[in-house]
Length: 108
Image (cartoon, rainbow, N blue to C red; front, side, top):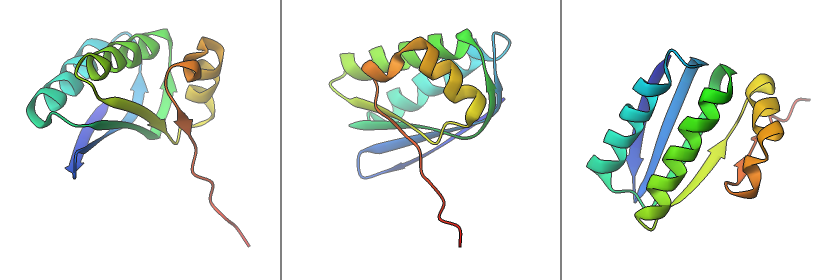
């Protein structure tokens, strides 16, 4: 699991790459929490472009992150989930709490 972030104009974008399962969940929560604490963003984007696998541990990471942002008055969004993580997100119904956006590539 690889995690990195970018911050600009009150928006923290956290990129996840690899597999988010029970082995990496605690490290992921800590890394995201530390980034939130250091930047105090208004918005947090969880970018899943490079996340290839996620299980229910990933849902727990997302919910903890959502609660941290909500408690600080911020907002959270999920972007670009790949097919397998998207299935887990859909099954969880998390889109009722957190907006999920997928960027579509235009091919000609």
